[in-house]
Image: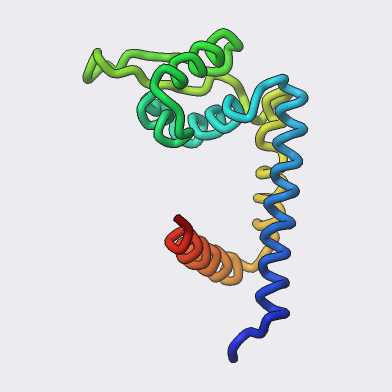
Length: 147
């Protein structure tokens, strides 16, 4: 059965509602922690990718290597990350989060995502997998169509 415009609109509205709610939660977390958007995005990326290299972070954030160096220095001064020399290649630095996102005040950055995950756990597994697969397909198609 083919979905009509109402179904498409409902899905788009639901996705936008999620994006707006998550964005509002991150804005509030940034206010609580007194960090900027780039610092928050960097912290969340590093937490998801422990031991990330500065170049990888630079590509993810879309900023220069000098900008990443400044950002990392700022996060080190806050005690939020550490920079370590890679034991396999001493020319390479690895960045790791040092704060605990499960405890205040840093939990503010992940509060919404954690609450969403708890709600998802209560859902039906096959529905969750189907929805995730569909959202990934829709996102890939939209991203491919965008310049």
